[in-house]
Every structure is written in C-alpha cells, then in structure tokens.
Image: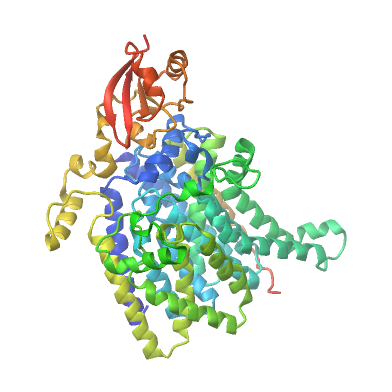
Length: 90
Length: 528
C-alpha cells in the first residue's frame, strides 16, 4: 500500500510539473494544451526512470520519488522566469 | 460537448475508462508478449536496480524499450506488476486527444473532431489492450501526436511545438520499430525544411549566427528530443548488433527474417490473399461477442465499415482543399505502410488506421449539414457502442466463468469486484504457470533462451531472481559451470532443448521438477 501511495505522489508531482511546464509554453488551444500535458508527463517519467537507471543506477522508490520532486522544483523554478516568447508566424 | 452524438459518446467513453481502471487494478497482467519480453525487461532492470542490456531473448535484446520505461515506473514503487497494466491504459486518453487534434489539423469542425477523438476511445482492439503491458496504445498515441504536431509546425514555427513534435516522434519510435515508417516522412520533412531555412534564410551578421536562428533552434530541439526519447534505442542496437532495427534483418544488416515477426495468422485467415485477409478481419466484428486483448481477426469494431467510406470522402476533401502536407506526409505514408505490412489484417498492429481514418471522417462529417451530420454521428456512436460493450462486459483474458447470457456478465463483474485475491490473480497465464509459485522466494532461476515466457520464472511480485540466460550449453561441464557462475538454484528449459539430455544424464546435479507452462521443464539444481 505504501508503494501505491508513493507512486501516486510521484506521479502527481510529475503531472503537476507537466501542467506548469505546459502553462509556460502556452500551446494554442485546449486540445494542444491537453496533448502537451500528456506528452510532457510521459516524457518526464521516461527521463526520470532513465536518469535513475542509467546515471544513478538506482531504481528504488526513494530515488524515483526524490527525482520527481527535484524535477517539479526545477519546473517551478523556471516558471518564475519570464515565459517563452513565441516567434512570429512566417 | 453539447452536440448530442458527442455527449453520448463522452458518457460511454468515460464509463469505459473508469471500468478499465478498475480492471487494471483488480486483474493481473497476463498478456503473452508481456511475459515473453515487456515485463521481462522490467524484471531485469528492477532486479539489477539499473537500466542495462536485457539479453534474455531476441526480443528483450532488440526491441526499443521506451514503453518499458513507463512500465518500470508503474512497477518500481510497489516492486510488483500489480499496476503494470496501466501501460496499455494511460496512453488511450492521450491518443483520443491526438485524434481530435489531428482532425482539427485536417480542417475538421470542432464537433466532429471531438467525436473522432471519442470514437477512437471506443475502438475495441484498443480498449481490450488496456490492462496489458502491450505498447501498441502508446505507440499509436505517439504516432498520431507526431502527425498533428508536425502539421502544426507548418503554421506555428515555435520552439515549444518543435520540442513536443520531436518528443512525440521519439516516443513513437522508442516504443515500436514499426512506427518508424509512419513518423519518418513528416519528421524528415520538418527537419529538412528547418535545415533549409537555416542554410538559405536571411541572417544578418556572421555565418555562425545562423546556428542561433529560430529555424536552427527548432531543428535542434526536434532532433535532440527525437534522439533522447527514441533514437537512442536504435543507436544501441547499431552498436551491439550492427543493425539499428535489430532483430529485424534487412539488406546487409543481420537479424531474423521478416516472416518470423508475423507468425500469428489465425486459422480463419490462412490461405487467403492480402485483400481477403483484410476484408475478413474488418468484417469479423459483426460476429464477435467478446474481445480478447490480442483479438484477431477483427478489433476495429462495428462502426469501422462506416468510418472507412467517410475517411475516403475526407481524403477527397483534403485533396480538394489542397492540404498537400496532410496528404503527402501523413495519409500517403500511412496508406503505403499499411499496404506493405504483412499483418495488415491485425488490428493491434494497425491501430494507426482508425487513428487516421477518424480525423478524415471528421472532415467529411463537418461538410454535411447539421441534421445529417448528427444522424451520421449517432449511427457511428451506436455501432461503436455495441463493440465497446462487448470489449468491456466480458473478459479480455481467460477467466473461467461458468454461466451464460446475462449471468455471465454479472458473473464477470462479481468476479472482478468481489473474488478473493487468490482467485482473481490466478487466471490465464498466471494459472497456467502457477507451478513456479512453489519455488522459494529469493532463489535464482536460470533459463535457456528458447524458453518463451521468462517472466513466469520471476513471478508477478518479482519473487525470484532471473539469472543471465544460458547460451545453449553443449556439455555437462559447460552447463555446470554456467549454473554455478549464476549461483542458480533452478533451471528452466524448453522441452525441445538439447540441454534436457545433458541434465537427464546428470541426475546428481539436476533433479526433474516437472513440466511448467509454455512447453517448459523445471529442474532443481544441486551445485554439489
């Protein structure tokens, strides 16, 4: 049960970070925003597992949870900076 | 959402997704490909506590494993495969959004685009894969997302879209080799167009400033994210096997012949031509009352035969409105890929077809007047609902239900919701392979490469440790050395292995334990 709770917390952190990241890049339209959230969340999970498994060589729940919150912190930190400026349409 | 066909479809899809969550939580992951390689990769990674080469068999050693990264996430926290079935479920909503978006990208109106996305979530072959470790839903979602984002890049040349586009293409390629032919045309075009803009575009100042231009940034972000999320697996295969798409052999690149990958032809389709096989499969749904997770033939549902002509009409409308990028970079490559795919009849391998046909159908629906469009929408939802019910109300895996009719439906629901763990988790492959449950927790099992379901030896809770596979030992001394080197207490062979003769001739070290699932033989190893 503790494992499930940890999974939910870590996934929640990744999802929240993905929503913040999506809000920062501001895709045009609701569908584009939903797709961006999904893709960023999926890619983030892959990155976290990849960093834990390849660089840290540690796939323990504690490592994954820590990386999830580190990722969230990075995203929140970058969200405090001015948003990305869109390039003009051609 | 206020459009009645879409409103009805929303209710049905929402109910279906909730039920699939219940199923993914309550039923074990017992899909054959998972036990052969998807889950095996995760088993080895979690047991070694790192991501490493998994050489248990050709599939674990060759296929890209971005999908398995997601499964690893789902399994790592509990150190069990209790929730690994979400691998097939989580990408479905993403695929629905991508289908609706692609429809908008094709120029469809908002309402039919939304309906297209919802109908995608009602494809029974897709729904039946929810709760498995199969990567097909993930691949399909990523492919369709790539198409849509690629189209958007023609209009919105910003870095964020470029990054998401490369990520989606990478996730598609990283989950399944066969998605390459679907995403490479649009990926190649986007990259070449950006590179061309970098080379010939107007840039003030020194030439190196070109590398900091918006086009160069888009090129770099797309390429980098594609490589990170998918391309690295192909690089790994190139370095290890000398073939970027190993185990598929082609030209001078070593691997297995193409036919090996498509040996799953159901008897009903044997001896038929390519066209006959496709037609038979596309019409099979009218006779199906339930859907196995790897349903074949059939799987696109009863609405499919209505969607196809609408999609053709939508293609004609794209042609008329001169949407060449959509036609030449998405529709034509998908059609060519479908035409050359040996298992074009297999719904699981061709889920990109409804993913493309539904947005095209949305374009056609949008060209109709309000009333005919609503009627057509209701017709599609009604037909899809029948197949969706069949996919959800009866098991997608082998569960012994001894009743018929409505009692069978209620029996299934009762089994899922109320059966004790010992019954609920003892179905299908888990039941067939329960001989392994007698093995002590924590002991090490070595298998020969020809044993087809290595995950059975590990167990759903990763109870036993999977050793490096044996390389077809030819003598007793070699087998003894291999077993001792792996500190294994158990040996699993295929019934046809030459290793059995070696083990039989040395009863002091190998004690027969009996037959196990999928033509396996289990031996107790006495190091001596």
